[in-house]
Image (cartoon, rainbow, N blue to C red; front, side, top):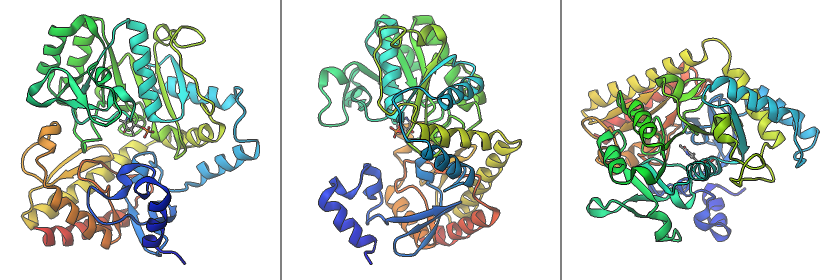
Length: 426
Ligand SMILES: *Cc1c(COP(=O)(O)O)cnc(C)c1O
């Protein structure tokens, strides 16, 4: 039987880097990825027969853990009726109703097939609705791999951005302005200089893709204020935070209402989904009501929508978010205590069930402070945890996700492993 090493060799012959999404290749921590045989609840088994308590959760979607029965049953039942029709179905309407009921800022919502597609479409809509071209994003925030979003700040504090990827035309990247996360002054400066040209500010209301970084008090409110004052739109990319930090997302948790919201991950219950929505007036710019084009062969896919609806139903049970909060807090505390005992500098950032332990001293409030983390130490920590049966994200700059499938025993296992490992990476 082929082991993980064998599969990785085979994969590398036919798939770039052997993986279908780059972070899976373990380049952030060194070594080679294991290949998954199956998952159940909080656990993953690799093809070599090893078991892991999984805190990656497929990078966010698996808030119920692996193969939750109600979701699997919903998918099987839907599949029996056909997997795609290219014509509307009742379940899509139910999903749109569930989203609009949970997110008062969303009156109309379009379902797409990925978070990337949701962000890309929301930006096109923002540009179409405002007639402006510039976009403002934050360093270290990820909104999928569409061209205008793959940019970072140019060196020397350049106003305009350079592409983060080969193949992104410079003129397109220059339409994206960047600012440090949590830095309202930088945002206000951009608006002073280009206010009339900025179509939208897009932000992860809780950053998850530089590791977890919470918004400072007043940051989201400030974005709301400055965008409104300049006639620009505020887009919350809640692809991770939607139905994660609260049922109503970060906008419910922090009480700030964006113009447009991007969703994904959890609303697909582990199948490919995304969504973007906003007020009736704004969303009326989308075809066939308006002139902003966006379409998809598999959009609102019956299997994905069935899986998503089954997931949301579980999340509506009373006490779910209190449980996620308590378990997230328990894991964060275990990491903090273990690091203190071992004398390892570790800053744990957490919002609800998403958290990151940065291997550095002092507050992590933006990408620059996140970058101070000792990635070599994280790599040693990651591999040692993996060796003790705990799977974390294979990069320092990602979130760990606690799910409803993680039991007290799973968290205790992770805490014990962290205590042993941190003592050894000191
Ligand atoms: C994952 C993610 C995306 C992209 O979603 P895909 O489904 O991977 O295309 C966009 N925004 C945020 C905040 C994400 O975490």
